[in-house]
Length: 401
Ligand code: NIG
Ligand code: FE
Image (tube, rainbow, N blue to C red; front, side, top):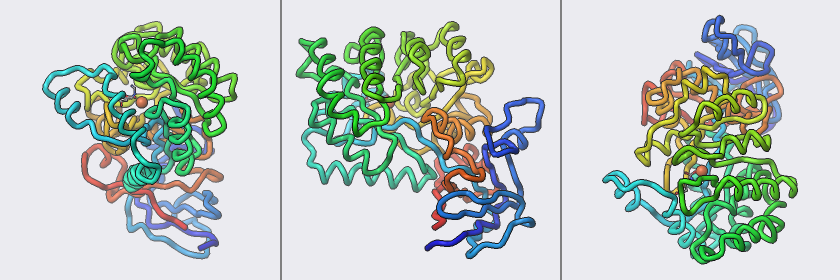
């Protein structure tokens, strides 16, 4: 249906935008509501999938149709800037073993690679579609999706083709781990990833990513990761890094050094890493994935230290079969508030406009004139309920058209 739509009856609208529609106001002397961009008894006009007007309902212009959300809260749709949704197979036994004390080291990725290679296209497409639908049903409106469970030219290409059917934010992760069949020849595998595989995959990807983790025998060292990222950059891809997940390491430093859009995990950072990230806050986002620490029993990242240092933060799900098999952004927000000690406002900003920054997007993550009309509605009077009612399905993407 075309024409303009007046979304009305919004008890609390959180725009995650400043008064001019730009970034949320960082000035901590201002009240939290003002910083977050809260409008009570609000309305939004949507035209052609874009936000055309935002403000108090009493001042709303006329529109062709009205959609009354009955006093609920509305927030920007969540921007999940890190997921691995193209996979087959099940690793619940690995999860159970971890809960009983076995540490995570990335070795299980090979299990998912075997299952993913064995799956037919239709099966993989259906699994992916179901996961995207689950995320959307919980309020996610933008999703980044990585390859990384194929690890041959054909299988990586297939993963990216399927990912491309559900999002433009596709990431080539041929350097997820060295696959089992290439263990005797790491360099040969890196030649493939930075050569023929990259050349085949780059046209289907916006980003290149690498699991930079010297603490895992399966993943890549700083030098190897640099090689992957430089080759990706030469192929025209933006850069993302899995770094500092299992222990201290070079990932964050490398991401800052190469101007990556994001370094993700950031669980083990030293003071120099934090200083580097704070100095690069306009370029490189630190993306926290607390669902991973929940599902691996690792310590949570120190979000307060990062907020206080002025690091640009995002929250994402990392939904994958190994370290975090959930794409629920409300769950991630609840963890961020309860375990990472972020405020409800900080967590919401990180899960929306923070994720948008991590994807270098200005058209999503906030509710402002000209941005995409990607809204999430909450069965709640305010955004704090996302953490206050953990596990309850109170958020969903709002279908406006
Ligand atoms: O982001 N750390 C690397 N990759 C995923 C886990 C992948 C897996 O175990 O299957 C992550 O945590
Ligand atoms: Fe990941």
